[in-house]
Length: 506
Ligand SMILES: [Zn+2]
Image (cartoon, rainbow, N blue to C red; front, side, top):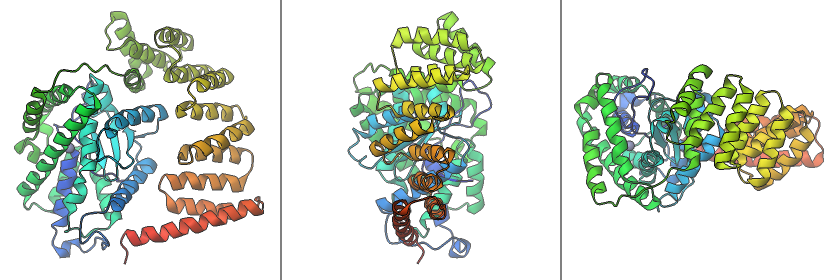
């Protein structure tokens, strides 16, 4: 199961869902605590841990941090059912993240933001620049600046290299071990007791000093995050409003909070610190983006039964009580489509277009409604028209290919993918779509070759090599195709050797 690592942040209740959660907790702290306790293990206990290579001697190199993050990410993508593979939400959260990383001078590496289907309010960062965002955070936030304030804090954990600094020169663990630990702890992000139990089982020693260590990192992430938020033009006051609200929620759930968090409350202190900073900041009205409203409506409208979702948005519209009319209409159309009411869904889309014009997310919704009603050609034509207006919005292109494939138009799909792959050679999804059309047209070498690239880009090197070997044996390639497969195989084997060395075999 596990995967993930560094940190997150405010755990909280899911709004509108009584099932959830314990108090406010920073996952980052939990991870750091667990790591520090593990590192403090007596040698005898630690013996079954793999031996660690390069980590000893100093902090993790940026390359090692990236490897840890990639390994954890691979686990999340392939094994975590809550990983939310929705291109539109992914595009939104990355564009929001980029507004922050663009103004953080230390955020030079590539950041990758991704969504996690989890109704608790949280976000977490892993070494190397991978930041997970719970759907619950988007739904619960009352302004985009609130989400930005959480992300800015997470980005700071990454740019300040908190995990690497925590490990310092005492580390005796390999990259895979650290990655596995990160994943295990993150798996407990919505259920802090699990992680606490694991930690307690390891040792009960010296918790207080570790807590202080974690607290310093929290404070630093708040400080750097605040600067980022300020430079990015979001409203810094949102930091206080949001934490305040979370804290109030947290109190309601206090009895569920792990004991050490109850005895070492961190949030009032954090809030006081932030309040001091915010005090002098000018009030700044930062309007929410339309994409923020549409993204949260999309998440909300996909939750619960179609009937529930329908009620939520019908109530908003009829009472005229919504943060954004566009969001409410988008949610209504989505919920109606889920309930099979396609004509009424299209009526809501028509209202939405009058309000916002031909927005790519709205056109994608319109296409899904057509497709749901069985009009696949109509869906294909809608996204094709929208793609001419927004050629760089990739979710449109994915949908365009998807509808072509559903219509059996694989030759067109392959032609279009050839162009797209040239423009976006690092987009794993494009290769996956290519593999699908090659498979459907019986081209086995090309199918395995495309799949190999898709796996490679998602960090699954071994699976990529397997696919290239299958491509070699496919029996339907010409001389040039076979040589290109062989050349790629040689490259990946070299990478595999390097990776083994780095991960600390020795
Ligand atoms: Zn934190």
